[in-house]
Amino acid sequence: MATKNTSDNIEDYIKSLLEQTGIVEIKRSNLADTFQVVPSQINYVIKTRFTESRGYEVESKRGGGGYIRIAKVHFSDQHHLFGNLMANVGETISEQVFDDLIQLLFDEEVLTEREGNLILATSGDDVLGPDAPAIRARMLRKLLQRLDRKGFHL
Image (cartoon, rainbow, N blue to C red; front, side, top):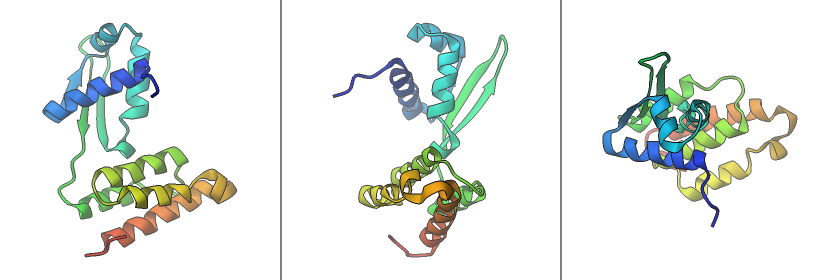
């Protein structure tokens, strides 16, 4: 079993707060003091682990009274989820963002673990080649369109 690093511990702490209240407002400096790290490490954790593609909204205000507000996005229904994702799919998608979106679909109980793993197994740069980012974007659009059809299940 792998040991958790400081970034994992910070992420777990923020997620535990989110589970309690649904929205978290924290001072970067206070969190840095709590974990005995520099504030830039808090920024790193938030920028890499609490992204839109992972289902989070982050608002940040810098300065003396600055804070970071993190909220877990909850969709009213799957159609809203698909519409939101479709609106944010660009012409290309990195492998990491694609993986995060498939994880989000699993977390929202749209995909089973097996379905998600099958999609991920076929969506890597090593499989899709040099045009992988553009192919992934087209794959995601088609997948979302298909999933959004009434009554359709993979």
